[in-house]
Image 1 (cartoon, rainbow, N blue to C red):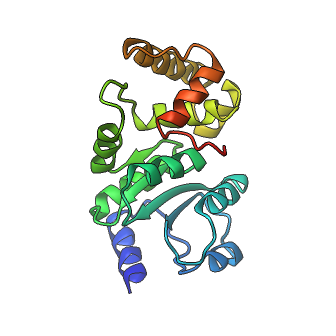
Image 2 (cartoon, rainbow, N blue to C red):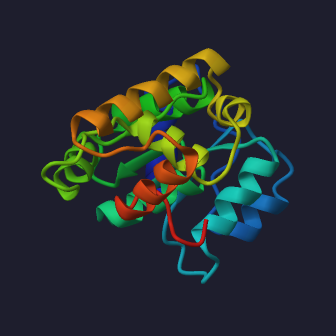
Length: 201
C-alpha cells in the first residue's frame, strides 16, 4: 500500500522522472525486465537478512545509483550506508518533493541527505572535531578505504580536481581541529575513529 502511494506521489510530483518499476523485494528488483535502471530508491530494511552493503555494491557494479530510505536515523547507520556507496539517505517522514530532489540529485551523481540527518551526523562527532559535509564524508570514506583520487572522482561523478579540492578541504578542517591527517594512513585511521569508515573496509 505504501509502495503504491509513494509511486503515485512521485509520478504526479515529477513528470520528468520515468518510474519504470515499483517492487517490494530485492529479488524482484534484480529480476525486473527494466533492471538495471538509472536510480533505485531502496528501503534500508526489507527484512530479508541481505546486508545493505552487499545490495549497494551489487547496484554500484551494475551502474545503478542508490538513494536509501529508512526509519533509522542513527549516525552510525547513515555513515555505514554512505561509505558503502549510497548517494542519498532519507528518513521516511520526508515530504515527496524532497524525495524527488534526492532522486534527481542521484541521477546527476550528487548526494542528498535529510537535513535532520546532517545535523545528527555533525552533533554525533567529537565536539572539537571538524564538521564535514555529506560529500566530504563520502570522499573521505572512499579515499580512506584505499581508493586512488581518480577512482574517488569517478565513483562520485565529479572531476579529479574537485576530488582533490575536497581532500584538501577535509585535511584543512582536521588541521584546524588539531588533527594531522596529512597521510593516507592517518586519514584512514581518523575516518575509522569518527565512524565515517568501518574497520572492515
